[in-house]
Figure 1 (tube, helix red, strand yellow):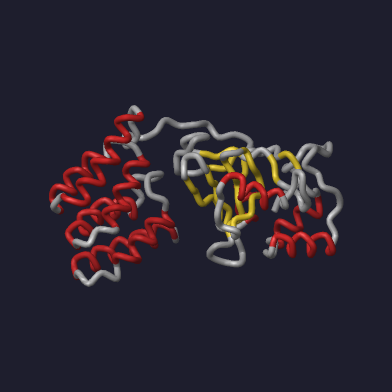
Figure 2 (cartoon, one colour):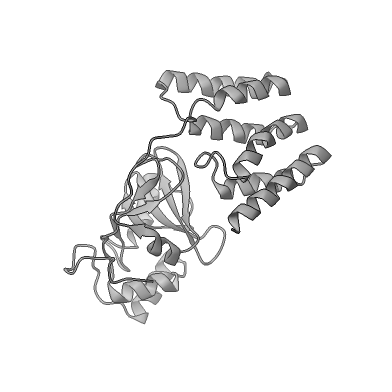
Length: 274
């Protein structure tokens, strides 16, 4: 981890003083979680600071930019401001999971250590108002190493178009109606139409089709997911979510769905392991 370029020379308001083993133990006890060793070692060098490199690349558009998130500072081991602020920020902003530890905050957007799936936490971006979550890095060290000083924003791809609030509401209602009452062919035709709207609507109908009881709907969904697995449509479906759906569908009782899912899983794994 290259820490020499992370902060300015002068101390700032986020600096919480020297870190020792007793402080770390007390904070971990109050938080009821073990901090990553890479985070502790960084804080021993400087315990909280404004970042020089404030941008982290992402393929998923969000309220900050289409291809990055902004991170202004890192909380130190302490409070006001510090790691312990996570306790009241979660409550204040309705972040329900106690296994999300906020390490930087620009409400309603937060950068968190995510302990929900494993002890060594990944790093996620959460926008409470947009109900959006993006996985940024597999661990804290990868996150720190991925920070850069500038990322030029890019235009959204053809899947994103400008829609009025009323149009978006109408689309959500229509999706619910078609999923509930439509035949597989009708759902598929409407899905094709949704692909020309925006990413949030696409993700919404993907989840609805995933939950549908009919294998034909799953098979039609896989026509799209297989393209995502091969590397197309980046930014619409995150790889972790795609992997979750494909693993689920690979357990289908329907042979065609099962085989198609396994084929797509192989393509996804080959791409991720390159």
